[in-house]
Image (cartoon, rainbow, N blue to C red; front, side, top):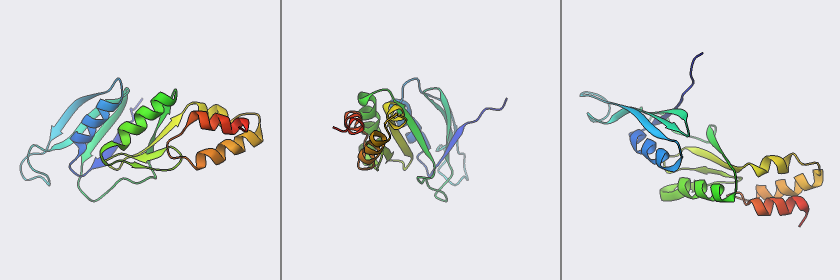
Length: 158
């Protein structure tokens, strides 16, 4: 069966991005780096590709140049067990130039889009109380980083 690897196109920042991501996510590492030689579109020795794993998911960073940039049409979703995890990933990924978005979305300093989502959101949004689901949805539509206690309170009508 073929393997599938996420490939992220950077403009000279692939190695720095991989180093940053493996510092944020547990069970992560860089496994290989290939480098440009003489006569390439980047200085000799610049990373061409960086193979890395984030929590055992395979990624490849490619320094391909300025032709393509990241946008919100592709993002990575982080399912967080509790508010502490939501806060951790939100703070780490928005640090040093990242941008907060609505409804748990953000862009990191490299322009990659992430969704930082509490696992509790799934049970809240699939609850039996349709009015509670509506209140929770209204609450999260006004949030940037998800606040689990506020979502649960909205569901309960508090």
